[in-house]
Image (cartoon, rainbow, N blue to C red; front, top):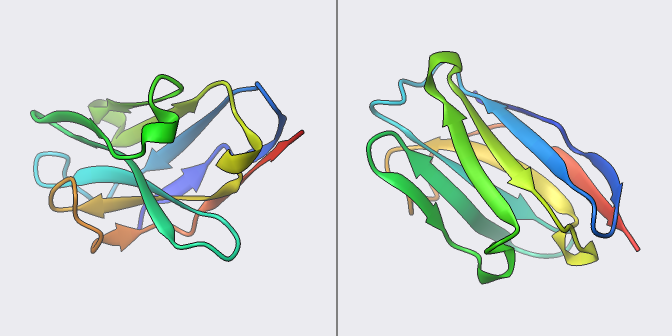
Length: 117
């Protein structure tokens, strides 16, 4: 399964970079999506990237603040999060999916991001 890292506690306006190492998944075949889930809320699809197909942003609230990138040689995808807000607080998961837009796939265990005001 993919492995996330990089979460933590940050103040409002701060930045974090999450990493998703997906060594078992061929980036020619799988997209990597980031999801998040806040306490008591449903899972939200945030961004996705697929080799040869580019990036997709699914959550309006992160546009201009979050970016997704990949290092294909390392089978690693990054989620750069800037200008963090309290409502970004959630567990962030990455998942290997067959195509961007899918919810079914292989999920990591998640990494907690907490934004304090």
